[in-house]
Image 1 (cartoon, rainbow, N blue to C red):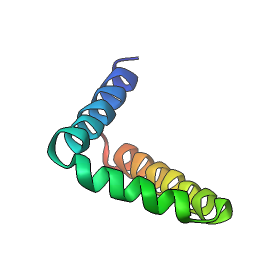
Image 2 (cartoon, helix red, strand yellow):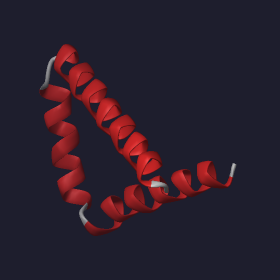
Image 3 (cartoon, helix red, strand yellow):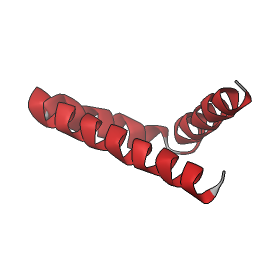
Length: 64
C-alpha cells in the first residue's frame, strides 16, 4: 500500500510541475493531441503504458 501511495504521489508531483512550470507548452501539446487521429493517440497511450510497465518491472528486478 505504501508503494502505491508513493507512486500516486510521484505522479501528482510530476503532473503538477508541468502545470506550474510550462502551462503554455501543455496547452500546445493538448492542441496537437486534438489534431491527431484517435488511433494514433491510442497507440501513444499503449506505448506509454508498456514503457511504464517495463520501468516498474526493472525497478523490482533491481530490488526497489
